[in-house]
Image 1 (cartoon, rainbow, N blue to C red):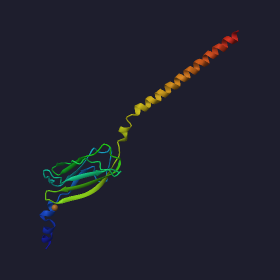
Image 2 (image 1 turned 180 degrees about the vertical axis):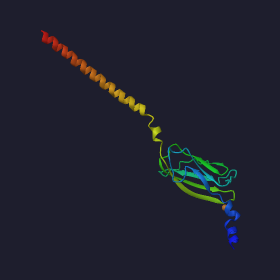
Image 3 (image 1 turned 135 degrees about the horizontal axis):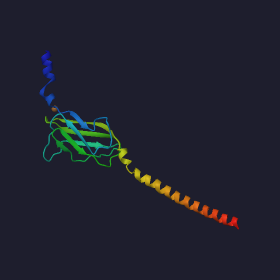
Image 4 (image 1 turned 90 degrees about the horizontal axis):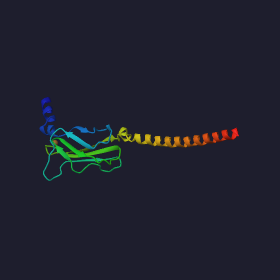
Length: 163
Ligand SMILES: [Cu+2]
């Protein structure tokens, strides 16, 4: 009876079903910067039929726009799609529909969060430094001119006093 139950629980069909082994980004993860591609690795080979789209991977950004490319790359158990560089940061939804090697459709969705690489965005810092330097030098010139006028006025007054 116990052995019979085990045999039922481990039918060859259930074992052959493909399932997600890993993904990039991982479900519920926070990544930075926004990824340029998304992939899911399944436990078995994915079916590919010439001229027919049987596997799909769609990525939707926080504004509800699909930011994945239509052409997916299938390599063994991995499905990969490129992501548009114009995607909005925040919550991304990954929708997948693949056909495993046993011919069964596996579909579902999950989310991850992505934000831009702020450290990278701050690389134009030297530009703001230059702007500050420019403001400083303008201030310095104004100050120098003012001091020069003051000095001339001082010397003129000295000459007046000598008379
Ligand atoms: Cu199956």
